[in-house]
Amino acid sequence: MRKTFNGVAVNHTLGLIISGSFCMGAGNAIQAAEKKTYTRPPFSVFSSQIPDALLGSDTYEKPVWNLHDALNLPKWLSLSVEQRTRYETMDGSFKAGGKGGDQQIPLQLDVFLEARYNHFRAGVEFLDARQFGADSGSGINNTHVDEADFIQGYLAWADQNVAYSGLGAEVIVGRQTLNFGSRRLIARNAMRNTINSFDGVRLRLLDYNNWQFNAFVTKPVGRYPNNSAQLLDGFHSFDEPEYQTWFSGGFLEKYNIAWGINAELYLYHLDEGDRKRSQTANRRYFTPGMRFYMKPAKGAFDFQSETIGQFGTVRSSTAANNGTDLDHSAWYQHLDLGYTFAIPWSPRLALEYDYASGDHDPNDKKDQRFDTLYGARRFEFGPTGIYGAFARSNINTPGVRVTAAPRSDVQLGLAHRLYWLAEDKDSWTTANLRDATGRTGNYIGQQLELTARWDVNSSLNFETGYAHLFKGTFAKEAANAPDKEDVNYFYVQSMLRF
Image (cartoon, rainbow, N blue to C red; front, side, top):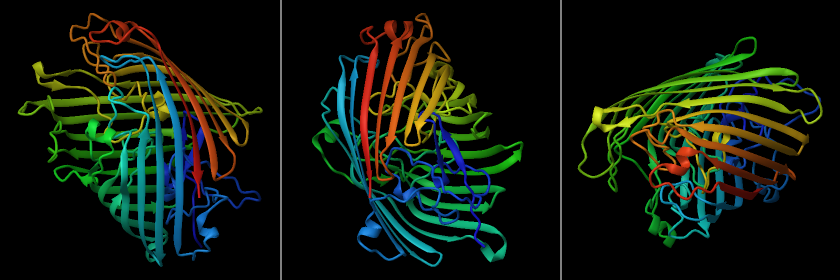
């Protein structure tokens, strides 16, 4: 008999529970239920992540409008098309030298095709991520645009019960996306217009209801072109693996170790060389970490704690002919405590705290600025896109978050955070602002965020959000800071799945 389990992790921004292969979470076995309930996919192209060769795909509702049924395709063949349109606008600026506001219309068009034969699969995913409305002052880069390229192309083998051992096993070879644990270090991007992918091999072992282990050896895929002028001109160049860079690691999850608490233990290794088209920081990092969490439930407390260390070496600058290597040692801590009220709307109140070390100082040949590797940040620090004011680097930030569901198809979110620099002589990295003397202080400001999502059905979704950055002393007075006015950011987007 085939076993499945329902693994979940929490998207704090929208208060949604995202499960299965997207978050690689863990939990209890799916019980035979009289009425089936489904979790909601993230607001991004996601069809390639819904099927799970070891767990099954019944955690997600089949799109009500789908090409498989419309074209009467055979069971062994899957075809899906997804399209996301977003309009985003920003009034004011927080980046060094910034002036005025900005706007952009980012578009995602994704086609996923997979064929299956017994234990084998072959899949390909094509993504066209482009934008309209940007200009030379927009600071456009390859997180906004990656036109007409393949983010997945793989061969896979999976067996839900290897040699009748009760263990499931899966091997994927080729280009693929990765998404582990909390997604703070490795993620398939959700709000960002482009998506990380990797060329290599991944092994997955699953002891149903007990543990899961992932191991991978890959080369990150570089998105090209990465030149702002070429991106604005619509110049096309196919993505290439970063041949001089290796990214590998192991990730172990243990389900329900006690009192409903789940645990994760992992170690990643990044060995980065210079790309043929540009120099890199030559990051050579080991990143160990562990996470403990309890999932939200009505009328109950939940919590999450993640501790990450990082050590190795990094080049002091990416400028040509700069060969100075710095000793790198950094750390990151996340804590949150939440409670879901057993009343209408099921509101959840959470207190959150994040600390990411800083201090990049070539003079003493040390670097303590935490590097989030290939992680996502939208669910924690607010919208990205043309905004993205905060990242997991040199920050000290407490916050509070409230989520609620007034209807089964509507989710609301409210979040407020205060931001300080962890090291006042280091940079506010996303703004490229720094006072090496530390005299400007370390208070960046505070951010208020509102979100709302409406799922019309399983094929059509809408979402809108607003963020306001109240600038503090550092954001106003650091050298090269833009004007002192606060920043307003707004977006509205739609998602179609077929």
